[in-house]
Length: 191
Length: 445
Ligand code: SF4
Image (cartoon, rainbow over all chains, first blue to last red; front, side):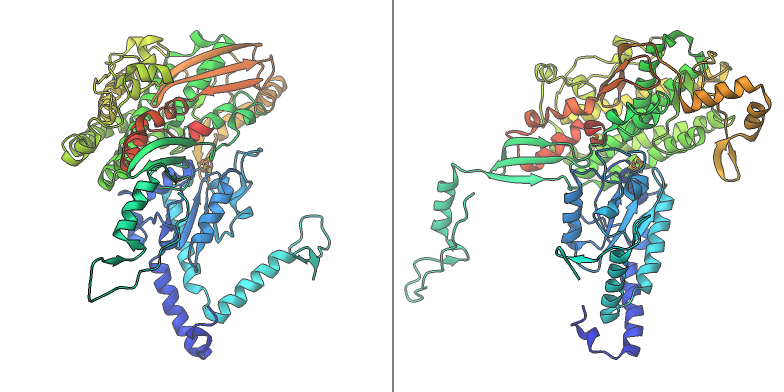
């Protein structure tokens, strides 16, 4: 990203461009069809006539991750499915966002057991969490609209890379409850 | 297929253009390759993330050209450990897990489960009549919703999105009723051991009476879209054939079995919940193909609606409790809608807290620890929208199941995939699968 034309533009110009790009991106966020469990039925319901997701420019659920910007992890994620979800995420082109739909995708939900990944954020970086079991289609639409706000405000170019690095660093430095310090390691060696 | 080095295009002699060089080799090379590859097969992998596999199902297809020579089914991508988790929850909590198995027909799963536990408890005949009728009403509406999804998503997978939108539109009517009654659209956990979690709200039956013609009109729309569409007919008739012998050998039940002409329906064969007192026909077709299966589903919707109408009649004349009188089992709760959503009604809480200390202790023990179920084992089956669903419940006399196994019709029916798809074309695999209508939550549990 930083190597593109945005990398060379003066920052005042980049501000207006970022706004424009943000609005364009938010207006055409295409989700990938990533139906997992019960929540997927509500996700499908959100696309049908009564709720009509197409009002927000996103009725096209893309079967190919290459053409999608948003992954809705809709439902419980089993350990067997986790690598598949990660692969789908990796196949999506940047910029991409992840919506974790339902109690199961957020935390494991009622399935506190050996089979289910206790929150899909173990596998993919989540941009917005949507609790509920299952969340109503209206709630899904609300979450998506919230995400649109995030997308609009997202910085562009070198700023975006900076923000991403800061977030990553914060995640690396985050301490588990009860932990006082954690040596940061990269490829097994302390840095 | 072995990797084949791409032959460099030969020097083209324009003066004497005897052959045409195409990218990747000469046409004769291509023809030779086809001859050589005759012995080999192309294996393609469909799913688990594929919009047409009805969820997270993985199909491994071996192809010879367009023809499928071998179909293998990979399941387990939605395994949620439900049966195991239930061993660590009380019997009452079990409903909340069973409802999440086949999530398209939640409350039919719950019904089988509570019937099994009630049989273990010896309570089967003590369930109040109103509760039984509510159960039948809810189960039939669930069947309608499930069949609507089966037909709608089946149509969607064949490329007809309108079928899906119409199917979901009518399902919404039913979900509105469910929401009124249970507080949830899906995963309702409405059935309780000993009855149902609460009575119908006062205006629910009037609402259903109003929605009834709308649902039927939508079903009519769907029938028109489905039965009169020549493309749909052309793709479905004679496709994904499996006759009675095959179905019996593979343990297939439900609409798939009835599409071969055998009128086997647990509601008639081994009646439960008083189904013998309801008027309805067991729908059969004789074509044994995908078309027949969809027809059975469409016609079953109308039969279920007939039962629903009878339930409404009966419920209007049957007052009464919706929970057994036995205080050892009856769940002591009374839900109401407060300013912050559904919860225990304040009057009920006041009543419990102002009663005797002993009753409060009993209440507490019942809710936290659960009731004990006599040791033994039962097997109960019901007619689930997908087929015969059975629950095998084993109790060691404790407050939790010792083992609970569910015979999910989707799982058994999925065995037919290879029988339906082998020898057909790739595009017909989708039809075969859609006509089985498996729900992966039920298959993997
Ligand atoms: S959150 Fe609830 S509805 Fe969603 S997948 Fe989990 S159990 Fe199903």
